[in-house]
Length: 268
Image (cartoon, rainbow, N blue to C red; front, side, top):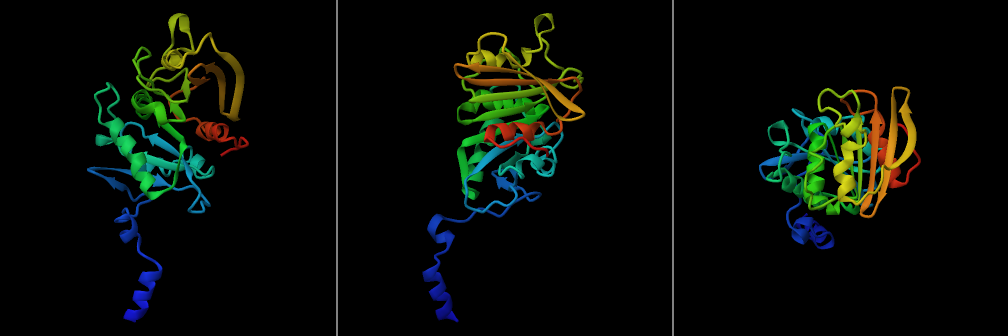
């Protein structure tokens, strides 16, 4: 028996000897530890275990945690059907510090991506950042401070001050907001301007003009959007506006991923 085990060891050297200790197993409800904090991960359906994965880093809303995100039909339901690895960091105190640039949460979120890269082969050219409500504002903060490596931001119902000075920016910024949002109110501009919610990114990415009216589109009978787009010198900005309140619209994240990944639009 000892000879047999020795032969196995010679034929199949352990990962521990080759690359150092393997990360602790974690998935779904089992959090991945990272220092004194943690995050959750959801693998896509039918992944072959080898192909590099696009990543969606999603910041949860206020008083939530990543356990909700990896089970959320409008978030993980979209990623797992589209071959995207979902990363859901846990905010300290179940919230995020996005108010100023003096925040540890940007570094923590960046560390989540790097830790996940030790566990999975990730596609560095397709790192997407998302968030809802306070998590959306955190996604804005992350893009503002560490956005140069981000392919696109998918932000839902939460912004920063439109005059924030951002040293970095993602390649593409997509935002959705409801006109009747009473939690994080729709940031109307002068004279009721409805393109104001993305003024920061229009300025930062060098967008000229009022934008192109891309018309209305819908996912379900209950969720329809008026889209405005800007093709800018430094990237692209899209704004979807709907007539309802504060929530993650059905199919919105899924549709953004379809467009970004070049997939046929589908629901869910």
